[in-house]
Image (cartoon, rainbow, N blue to C red; front, top):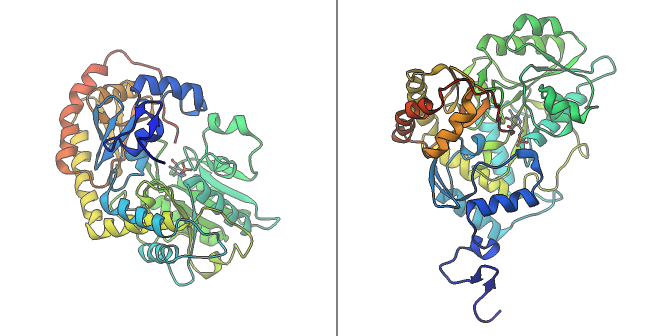
Length: 432
Ligand SMILES: Cc1ncc(COP(=O)(O)O)c(C=O)c1O
């Protein structure tokens, strides 16, 4: 095309970004009005319209800057627009963007090998790539079905569990409000009391095909399972021929200061593990990892698949992310910054409990003002998240610095002062 390109917003110059070329430039309020006219309302009204990110910061359409302490809900492991991840994705896309699963690519093979190595998975272990966490859980559910017989049909999950919104993942998710509008869900799932070894022991017999657990429940407000519970789950599943499936979609990929949260507990090696979120450093990629030859053989040729899963760009993003985390010593950094945040939060007036590991942190307030605190934090330039009326979650980029963490700790007392008024009962949970 000759001459200047013209959009609804006027002629495009070299100074305009590619995004402006495609969208025109509007204020946040104008975008939100357009959003409500065009997008399905499942997420409520977005808090801001974000247009740019760099490191741990994002900017909105009105030019305001925020320190991102949520990281796209535990996704932006390396922050926003990480130069190495961006360049690897771009060059892979410019070389070979998509192939069908009749073919493979070096990045797919290398990422699978890397995940198996980081998981210290035994010989015979395998990876199936997905595009999201829910899809990884669907694959895990199918694995459980392949461990089933007419006498072995039950799948045990936990109260408070969140495993995603597709039908199989939803069947594993415990919250009634998410499940009931979509019933009937795939059958056989039972939810037992969180972190209660006796309840699990009572539920277990040879009719159980799988037990599905999040080592740290993220959506429930960052609730870690005790090491004793994870060990008991490992022993009981082994005793009864059931699979232990650990959902590390939120807790995996260095988020807690270990590659995978279950690695904090000696002796707990799962039969399968689901991953997504941080794995692609912001690019959609998920995985089911099966441990050992027998479990890996449960799903055979033709029994599962995905058009986009494991594509060259997504797996290049995963490789670049894992490489950067490893090369930068992220595990120690996450432990250090996490410990600083943990201790700092515990000392803030109005914070009554702090939970979590590394940079997956939940804290409870002394009243139902978490949604108001989210708004006050935004006004002060911080992105945080309410998982419930009195609970805040932080899942920042793993490159968050001590100084950035300290800036939030310094601001938090004022943020809470503005909201620690009479209890505010309006719940504004963020759906994952
Ligand atoms: C533990 C866990 N499993 C599964 C999912 C679903 O992942 P996705 O939203 O990518 O489908 C989530 C999302 O929050 C999660 O936290």
